[in-house]
Image (tube, rainbow over all chains, first blue to last red):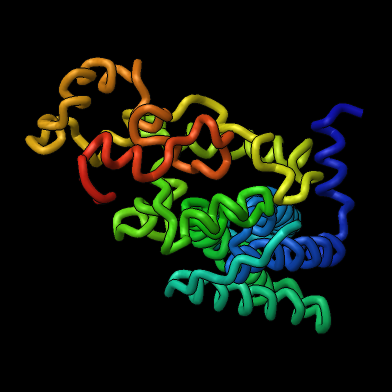
Length: 92
Length: 231
């Protein structure tokens, strides 16, 4: 299966709620790492925040974007204009 | 081995912390209650997973980069303990201590003296700092703080350009000093180091062998002819 097909398969079959749970868990870990450096400005917290913390946070955001894409693909958009009414046959 | 460096409280830090708390609250709310992912739910999650964490990351970057300029950051590796102690010792007459006592340097004295001052100075300084992290993790962290003296050395010779950020070499008092006048070109080009043993002495003399280190009196009487003081 090509990467594109894999991606398409992922967007068609993935569970939105499960992805959102992963996004939240990763987001909490990322936030914890980023917040740690606000309290302790030694080299470990600062470097962890600016590398691992932001990496995990970015992954969390990507998962949220994936959830959004899945939601938009499945959305039933209503047309903004009603379809034109069929014209009545004119009387002779 | 690693020391806690207390928070430098700034309004931005508090804003970031507030954003982090609200974002964490939204995520925990989702994990516990699993609201529907309709338009309202997705908007809430966009706030909790997108807008607020990005705010935390941006402010965290600003505060983090600012923190890397502080003495506390440099001193958070135990290997630098003695250098920081000397710089902050009110009785020390080392160049590092004399400069650390001025407002211009203050809590950022390591960075102000050791940073690169070129166009890409900031980035190059940070890259150099990454090298220090590598050296620390691969070697220095295994030494006790007293063992490290004499084992670690500055990566490249200290540039006179860094001294010349403040001491322009054009002032009358500076140029009137005989040794300065005779070595002007060498000092400007870096041929002769300001912090060599024969001139102002090492910035951190305790870390050098005693025979290479002139006493404080020798250094200052050679340059000024009187007691230690600023230029």
